[in-house]
Length: 81
Image 1 (cartoon, rainbow, N blue to C red):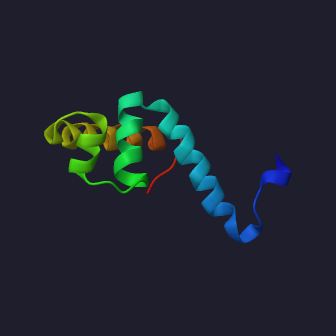
Image 2: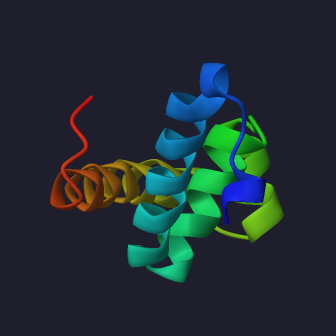
């Protein structure tokens, strides 16, 4: 484990990423999938809707719920933005 740790200048970023990855694990597959498309792949609502085969309105509402769930999962781990 220690050999995987980054240098001291990157520890906070590494730990934040670890907490976020763990929190994402608490989300449903639908919510994780949406957040990956919207936040990490930087796709638009329309692009995400097309990729997932769902209406744009569904992408918007599920994204809102997914972000809310992610905030709760982060708070549960003691992470406050």
